[in-house]
Image (cartoon, rainbow, N blue to C red; front, side):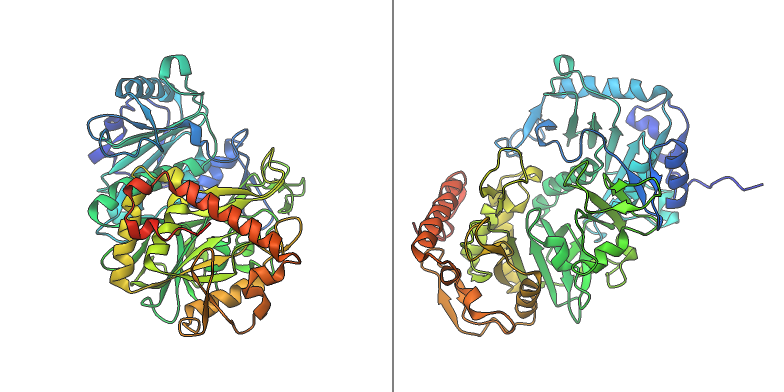
Length: 535
């Protein structure tokens, strides 16, 4: 007869009753990956694909629900949170919602994962995730850092997430906009998530919490990937919104990966917030992204909304459920990853943008003031077909490359960025992975090969001392040549068949940058405001 699964718990020290959960069904503490597979299959939450990945479907919510995210507005947050960017919920409404969730769990099977967020022990946050889904528990175990067994026995959560995908809010009673809700209460160190099966809400809730806590300790929290070269003192950061290549370009077999999405930057250096990676896998290429592609057929990987056929084979090219198909996998499965998640001060900081207007050069060097301006801007462009109603390139500005997760004003993070850049003496580069030779529909996308060549030249320092030209509109320095990249590509105006049309489109984009910056101008120094493009 098989021995029962051993569950590691700190319930005797800090049990579920502390969170109000005094009466539930069976409670499963810190189950490992294999055990959670068994539970997910038993409960018909998932299927196992050829190769061993766990495939799940998140129903109607195949991405985040930004309009359903709230921060409790109380004495703790009233004068701290950037309310222009964050929806508020009354403390009494939170208490009522919490009480109803507790009642909902009274007869439910419960899964608990105790995790760390933050590889640096000095700045890590102890996170407890309580959920009704076995696969959500596996997602948390995969995406966060798993404490050693002996530390689990005395684990004390610094923040707790109660996740009930099948519990829905009543807007009339609970003060929410819909039946879906993600509510953060900083006073009670508690997050409530309901009405959505999309597990990314768990991950991003923790990121939002860290974005509130760490900058107030002088640590810059960042939505970026990171890697290093020959040593941890040769680190690089990659900022960028979805579709710009942040995960792909940091997954470089010649460099060591620190993490693919969320990091902190302290006086000591860089540290990963997570223990896993969360990569988009729609139309993933085994040639272009071999490291990520390999993870889609590995035991322990969680695949969200990927099509699986009756023979359990995957169709990564299908967008039947969504374009936002995802793979969550442990960083320990990456052969060239730093398992400690730590590095020194970065030498290079890269801002990635997919400019669908075909205006920006493939690479440009930024001054510290320009770096702050472009960090605050967080620019990329959506193209036709990615969103309903988008028929031409659409500018997207997301402050600090992660506006939905910023509880504080963007200038708080930008000022910390300047301090960190000055301390590390790091160079900042803007790399366009978007279009050249014309806007989307006329021009063509930058080749991944050329972009990788440019990134390599940035990281090995060969571009720092080469010849540069000053862009007349955006006023950053553009290299005159990059070995292995056509010289004509470095001057986007020369790639257009109609230079006058380029000038018109460049002026249009410059105006959009300036118009967007008006939201932050009253918090910016004159030097940063002066870094805006000329119109």
